[in-house]
Amino acid sequence: MTYFRNFFSNRASSVFLVFTVLFAFFSFFSPEHRFIRPENLGILMAEGSEFCIVVLGVGLLMICGEFDLSIGSILVFCSYIFIRLFQAGMNLFIVWLIVLVLGAAIGFLNGIITVKGYIPSFITTLGMMMFWRGITLLMSEGFAAAFDRELSPGFTSLLTGTVAKTVPVQAIWFVAIALLLGFLLHSHKFGNWVYATGGNLSAARAMGIRTDRVKIICFLIVGTLCGFVGMMQVVRVSSFFSRAGDGWELKAIAASVVGGTALMGGRGSMTGIFLGALIISIIENALVMLRITYFWTYMVFGFVIITSVILRTSIERSRLSR
Amino acid sequence: MENEENLVKMVNIRKWFGKVYALKGIDFEVKRAEVVGLLGDNGAGKSTLIKILSGYHALDEGEIFFEGEKVQISSPTQARRLGIETVYQEQALVPYMSIARNIFMGREPVRALGFINKKDMNTGSMDALSRIELHLRSADTVIEMLSGGERQGVAIARALHFKAKLVILDEPTIALSIKESKQVLEFIQQLRREGIAAIFITHNLYHAYPVAERFVVLNRGMKVADVRKEDVSIDTLSELIVKPPPQEA
Image 1 (tube, rainbow over the protein chains, first blue to last red):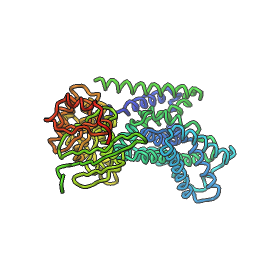
Image 2 (image 1 turned 90 degrees about the horizontal axis):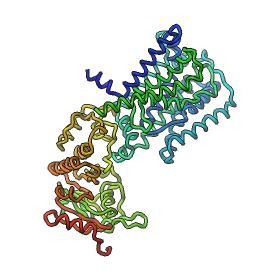
Image 3 (image 1 turned 90 degrees about the vertical axis):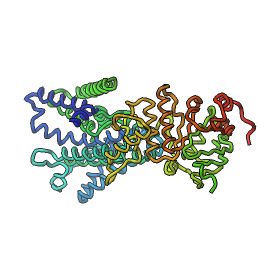
Image 4 (image 1 turned 180 degrees about the horizontal axis):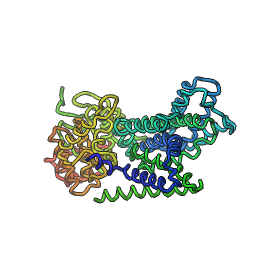
């Protein structure tokens, strides 16, 4: 019983409410209830999970008080390196490791520059966003490149196959990573350091927490996830395209905020971030289902972001005044 | 060894900040379980002195002895290891985290692989709170929900729990209501009952007077008085704080 009470007094419960409402709304109002049909849910889980996985990292980083605007660019650069190494004939599992390390390294770079250079992460990652996409465009000359899925079926199914013929593996990855990061955030001492660093940096430092290290690790996690998803995307689409990840940075921040993460840091939960990511994904998917032109998407996003934050803030304020 | 009764002994401490001569050769002692009021106007050097003791600043000249042994305090972590805890003005608490998580911030009790032992964290917190007679419903309450006095209580309980031998309180009653200030002064009395020494820095003589046993007054980087409460009145103390000191050594 206390479990339920704790659940609903949680910030994430209002996000869950928004998610349920949207899901029900789209299921009901899409023509022939297409939204909730297996074909669509399959697509949603396969494609939407990519963005959702990245949001998990971005949300974690926001809780420790920093932003990463370069996620789309890390993603596209990693996909490019992936495809080139693939074309060079390297063993795909080795390539996978290399690209993950590459993503981690770029994240690490973001972190080091931000903390040691005393530069706001907003600025560092803004510059990096342009830099990495620029390099990718330069090296790829804007051309797409094909990925042959047949070449390594084991690798392909690990990243994009299905489990029990119904659930796309990407969704499993999403849930698994969410659980892992969730445990890290809520049950591990590192998670406590993340909340402390984001909630009151000087307090954290005064108590001996190595806040620089905490931030760098969070940047590193984001970078790794971007590399991971970049590869997953190339495999799913069977090609590299130079616009991959474009515009994800603001959507990811929006998804985190909808999920209860505070812009200032120090507040948020993995459950909330998980749901926030899903909300943004289902909106995009559903707007297609409802035959609404793509341009409406942005308006709807804006509406949902503002409404969910107002909803959450008012729930919190009524609880505080009790 | 002489001076075993002194928990802390700072000898001839000098500190410069660039050209500013902040501490001009201060001698400062605190006995075990003693509450010392460190007084002085703005810029007298009180904060600087205790920041040296708590590891934030390095001294330029002088020595520090802790429990009779000479020590080098080069970081807050080192100070904490010696048993010196500081309760800051801004309390060094994270507003949206629970009491338990705040108390154990950076020193979380863990099981295997670094996973927090939430049960220990909880019992430890309730334990620490009860030692200063701060009665709160649950250690899961978020700091933001507590009053100013209760927050100070949590910060003090934290210092207590980690077996502090000396707690430094930097303006603990600033911005608190009268009722909350009283509560904090109670907590400080409780520290003494637990055998913990305290240095209490404040502008507010009326808060320090009932609680401290001894007063040290700094004025423009020099010590101008070191008196027991019985030997001095509040008026004399205020005079000592504002009167310009004799020529520097």
